[in-house]
Image (cartoon, rainbow, N blue to C red; front, side):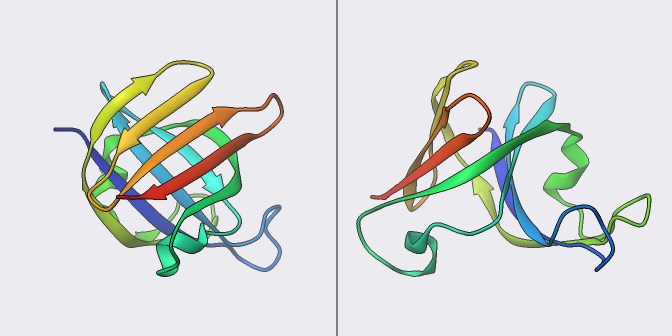
Length: 121
């Protein structure tokens, strides 16, 4: 089964972007990666469907599934928040759907940004 990880990326104060979360989904030999400035409320224990904006980043190395620590180039540090195995529902350039242990996620391409929708199981 493919794996996923949600990392907290703490960035230095003078870095071009603020601290955020990185959602990474294993796909073939890379991690499809999105940056989230806020987490869906459902991941904090709320019920229902929750949506947040997500920025698609370049694919990352599989090493980030197990890595915690400094990021090269003085880009801060990452710490694992949650990880596990998941099942793909669909994956293409416009929409990504996956079944995690406790929720179903859908990432929809909206042009300049993506929308992450999370539904509890």
